[in-house]
Image 1: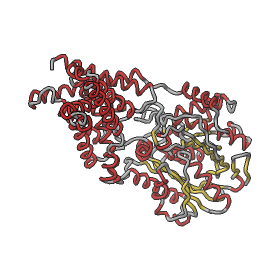
Image 2 (image 1 turned 90 degrees about the horizontal axis):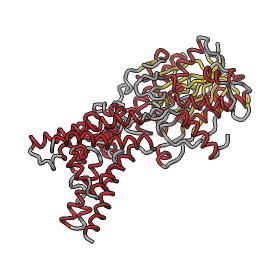
Image 3 (image 1 turned 135 degrees about the vertical axis):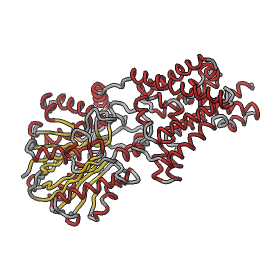
Image 4 (image 1 turned 120 degrees about the horizontal axis):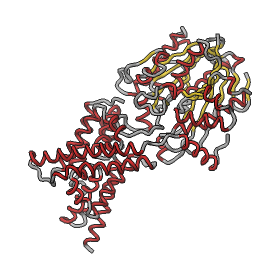
Length: 119
Length: 152
Length: 341
């Protein structure tokens, strides 16, 4: 991780968000649609082998946007498939993304227990 | 008044469009770029700290970083400021994983009033569901295709 | 009492009077340009309740109580309670006013419910089937948000055409005879659907309904826009109001000067543009109620308005219909008031 990564994290992360914003503002697509599209885009990018180099280059600029979720899902599936054959495509999907999903569920639950919506 | 014909509808919608203020796309995109960039920058810093002081390898540090960002977003949602921030930042707050956390946290908090099981449990994925479903479905097909292609 | 034209009920002869009104306003409304016109201004939209729904029900109940107090009657003197809100199955109306233990008729036409309620209430009074009728509506920004759109803490960026559902409730007591305000006409609207689909563009979805009902009312009664000191729509918002004014001028119903002067919108009046997150104005079943029973009725009492036409507008969609790709049909009902004694 070089010092340049810190710059590219900002630029690449910002750019992915900017793309999402343009889509939301110029089409009738809802945020839900756009986020789903970005996840799928991340998955496709990993399928083509281009997302990992992006992570090496831009660090958190590629791992923080929701696109990295798609990347991680494909990673898990491919890794497990390498070890266990075709069935790994099903068994390995959540392997790498456990941190994100588990954290989101646990913290969302705790927030619901301790906090009330302000409206 | 009889139901409007397609021509009448088209004419009315053209009028409505003319009188409707457009969204400030340039301003919104600039804000999204800056805020999204800053959140990723924060992630980069956290990641570096995990590597330096947490003993994580650079490739592994992404996971705890994402967990920390998710926690931060959950806290800001819980105290009621994330939605205000999101109105300003748009995709800059929605696209990073913080947005994902906000969808889960806000849905869980809102539906607490319907109880723990049907409320929190049954509604937590209300807004974030599509991301998970389509992420997994696309990952399945992409991994399948890649596997098949590699083993042909 | 006669039916005028196709859709208007002439109530004038039967002397349907509004003898008292009440308004209970939420925090943002209480800080807006009409802040001094409400009977009760709240500083907490939860009203100390544990759910948003119960908060709205509490507001509705308080509005009913205040209206009865101001009319110097007890709940038992009310023969019929008519009203509506935006919650599924009208839970705010039924559960909020449950303690009154009076005969109830819930009505729904989204944000046009006030005028639908007033039409039904006036009909009951005019025909003599009820001597005293209580009518009102409520809405709450958080119950509407979580039902029709998203969890309230969800970070979705709203466009400039969005509107904010008004938090509050209002009620009126109607009876035969003379009062400070007389209900003279009710015009029942027809559905208008010009193919608008976006829930962010309610103003554009509803403007045609307001236009149609207003035009029908004028045709049925033989009146012109100038016969009214003010015509207000319920919640078209600033954008919808602009569209309506345009339609009125384009179709020769009134001159540009007349529409600027005499046509306004409760959603545009209830908030100041600079209040946070109000976008193009207020909406909700209580929007027309708070502005009409508060500010506008006060103006009539002070003699500044003699004839008022309120065209409440409603967007008749559901979450399911929107998700299934349907358009947003709308409706508008009009009630004409005249200054009484």
